[in-house]
Image 1 (spheres, rainbow, N blue to C red):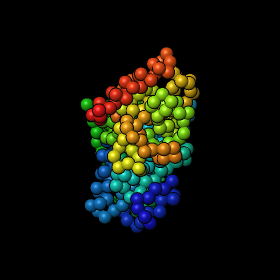
Image 2 (cartoon, rainbow, N blue to C red; image 1 turned 180 degrees about the vertical axis):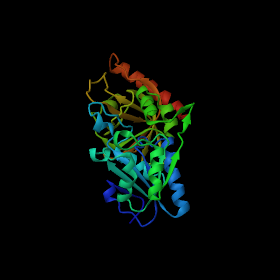
Image 3 (cartoon, helix red, strand yellow; image 1 turned 120 degrees about the horizontal axis):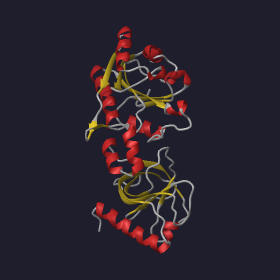
Image 4 (cartoon, rainbow, N blue to C red; image 1 turned 30 degrees about the vertical axis):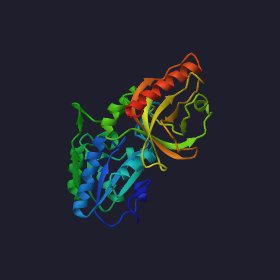
Length: 314
């Protein structure tokens, strides 16, 4: 088996015969608080000659319990898996969150897990982790169940920033408010959009600002507006400074779905069909409707010059 590896459910997780140190959680956003849990599992596994794995879930439990208003996730499943694998774990298991899983009693959860991962040696969770039927299980329940199974349980304290706990909920609120720099502090990395560059209507090129149009449709939509950004590509070792617009483009069309359009400041080696990642760095202004193309062109020039100052470009 080649490690690291990913599996689409516990039943398909064929792991080497080593003790498994398992971090468990939704881990939406893979923020600094999540990393504290996962790093504990990785470090313990390395010290003991074990294997570090992550058990996460898809979709969010709210999709099952309140489908009319589910929690909108920061990342899609592939992006989350890529980030988790990048933290040094040996395997990521994405377990479908089904009614069967939701119905497992809290007192039986570890036994249910051990049956599917016979080499399970220890579990790692955040101090506020809840699980089991009706979310009745907590860390105390894990500890009580673990004693009878010969398992270890490690609970990581919540990580605080500016006097408040770092949480996915807090980050979602910041993204929706356009407070991207604050969200990035909590994430521990720059919020990003990844996807394939698609051909556009060439409206940006027509007014002197060609853009890269990204096929990207997040569950959680950040605030519509203009952002200082960077573009990361396989063609360039150095991130490309850029300015990005996310929204409905009300001056040129009244679209029904938002689009991410990114203008690279300088030479752009990217073309349609390339896979790129756009890192969002700073919010410049909200999206607005201008009186016409010339007014839009003038504002885009101002946005470009403002972004260029962030990168000390002349």
